Length: 388
Image (cartoon, rainbow, N blue to C red):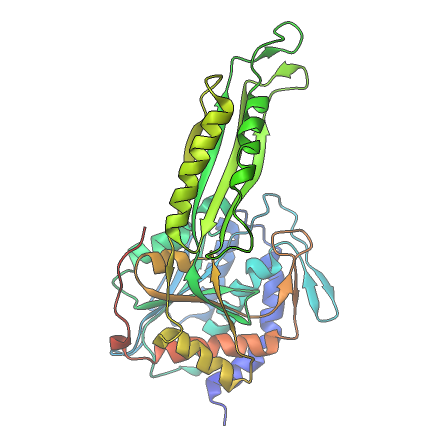
């Protein structure tokens, strides 16, 4: 027979769907999450019953629920930010579907965490350890996990394991953190008028040479362990009639094998220097570094997630390697995973969408998974070696 908490999770589903729309329609570009964070703070304040509630200097929102000694203490993270820099965040409703910028990544994650928090407080769940509910900043892009890193640092003595919550990942469980390095690569030249100074070096042309030199180094998509490289942003120049005095691109290198990232970076530096020669200096500024790491499928944390799935009749999950807030805690040596609430597609595009029907199982799964992990003995978790 379902417990009071489990019944509350089922009743919470319609509210979570509506909450997803409200959260999504509050703009939250990376580094500008405070307005959305304030809304989440007010929702947690209304739920009440916390031993501690705050919005920190980064705009992370944290609510601490005190539990019982001897049980595992959890840090839950659902990131507030989206990849979209503008203010346009309308959500379009259709049959069994919501479409909107960041609706699944990660408005649903935030809304589902609030739904679980409310159900847990309303039904006074017992037999669990401390649970830290956190809506964090800086998961996307240049945020470089700054919110999750701060939480892991500030609460390192207060939790034993972490669960990251992402809207889209209902049928996946993260067991590996993809290591990554991100660089801003730039070239500067004297520049000048396109007619009067014709013949001077053009920074855009030189940078284009550097980018083309990366093509032979692109890892094979079919190779294992998987390694990737991407040029994601290019900018520079002054006007159509100006010899460009500067140009910049942003480079992302990732792998499930951290050593592969370092090897590829060395090859990238050498290839770009050769391509540009002594015509200009190629400068590289690191703008991101996410640690790798892994958690065993046999670990008590992952087994608790699997058990919660089985209890609801969900299919066997895909164990995957990802780049999420989980990286911050895995890199610090904590048992960590990332789970989700529904299915969807077109993440990081204006066409992003989620299915609403699976949320009927996704919210109960999330709540049951959290409680199952928080009922584990603290002795189940030993902090591992920190990874860079």
